[in-house]
Amino acid sequence: MKINVVLVEPEIPQNTGNIARTCACTTIKLHLVKPLGFSINEKEVRRAGLDYWDNIDLEVHESTRDFFNKYSIQKNNMFLVTTKAPNKYTDIDYSKYDEIFLLFGKETKGLPEDLLKENLNKCIRIPMTNTMRSLNLSNAVSIVVYETLRQVEFNDLKDTSEYLLN
Image 1: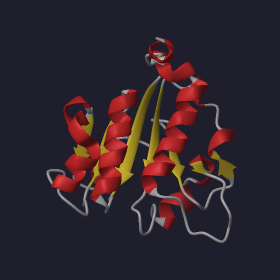
Image 2: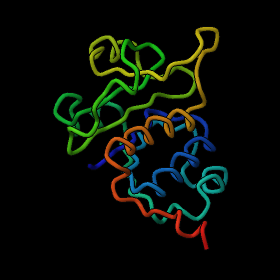
Image 3: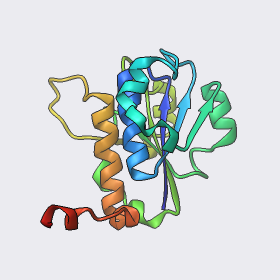
Image 4: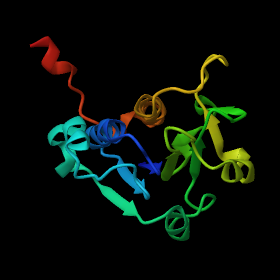
């Protein structure tokens, strides 16, 4: 299965760097949708992603409109990750798809409300207490990505357990 992580207007360079590192380590394509709250050349982004940037399959989109002109929510099996969803991220059987897109909104506002309302059946959430606003973006991406990978037996990612035994 091919997995795509889409960050719509990310604002914090360290989050994007951490997410880029997760994508590099799991062979997941990363999409960045402008405007970005930083330059991807900034040292904070590079530092968080360490030396993994050369291993990232990265696609940058000039705007949300440009992204959705190229990729369709329904045709491309997109799931919109939000705190405002009836479905948990674990309710989805990702293994039945050849390719999926996991969309995450900006740190301060999430995804646009109208987009969520129009696609409520494609919205997923990570359960958490209702007294908190949200999880950190890079943590949320990791949680959903690894559940997706678990369902497809980790897409044949290398098993490093043998190294721990020697």
